[in-house]
Length: 519
Image 1: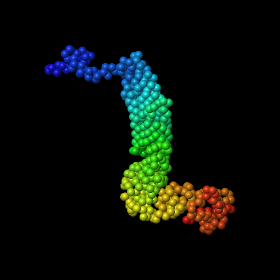
Image 2: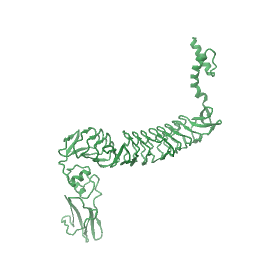
Image 3: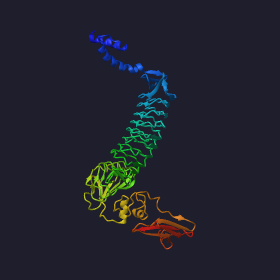
Image 4: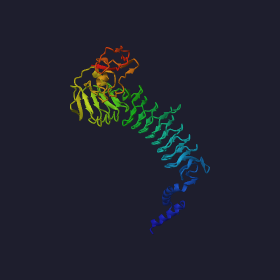
């Protein structure tokens, strides 16, 4: 045996006997012995109290595990061997799939990361007032957890702290919280109400950042009021929040995204920016820069025809990404820049109508994955456009730029300015002329919106809108579908809303009535 081998054997024996090292070998033995002792310390000090495993530093106890399946509520002791239980260690109850309720003593001031992660049946837990931080992934994947009260002294909520707690319905964030980690409430699909409390008087550490993915996939969240201290809203922060209908951006916010912040918020129809915000603004529900010259985001809940505000000169990349309810978009003459994928995956988008020259900076993937038959329309003589295709998209001229009430009406509904009077855009049986004359939206199914006759024992009446400029209205009656005449029809004058009523006596005969409109 070599000297080193003998020494190794002596060191191993000595260190396992609590460093009773021989003189002359003490320096080397001390170095290796401390390393060995460090590796053995957890095993040496891990102890059992009932079904709990724990470690102690001589003044306090940390719960490190629970050794058997939990058959009902679990009560963590406040003291063990006369020492207070002050902490729940890393992953102490992780993946305990039978734990339903846990009672934590008030002596606990620290709950470590992953402590209850994966406790799939945990539905109730109390967090003691002495806890000041909800650590990373503490309650991640606890889909049965229905209610949690976050103590008022908590200052930080860690990354993924409540991720995938799909049964949570409401939460209140204390005013002392200054940090919410990435994805802290991601996929809390049942969360409908979230309240941020104001900081207590004299408290100087405020919440300033909504981190990346914080509320991603909180699909039931219908309203949210952000604290007035927020300065940053991170990427994916509200992605797939399908229940949100509007969101107010405080004056304090100076940074948003830029990636997928409001992506697929399918009911979000309006983003409202505080007028004192120095960086952002809002117009017609769009999120813009302060000068309202750059369109940053279109809420995905907007539907039908969207008209870009006339102050806008640039549309940011992905600004309309996944706006799947938009049918037409009208571009004013002011727009010169359309960014990459600006209208990508707008799956119902059938028309892009340009009222001016071609944008000088147009990225060709702007309209990728639009609806079948998508077409770009432009006025005759507008610079930069080509037909039958433009930048790879089908394109057609609308003819000369002639302003008429009918052309203006067409454009306001996202239809080409030269669309024929008789054209039935959505196949509902109502042509453009009738929709224009009756003040109806040609993009909607009008089969159930047409004027309906009202019958009594002696007469039949029909009320209709009659205020379209340039249109003449007449109502005729007959008994045989052949001899139509207006002679027996009494037609009222238009009221304040341009509604007229036609009446004809029935006198026991079969009687028919028709409304005629002419441009």
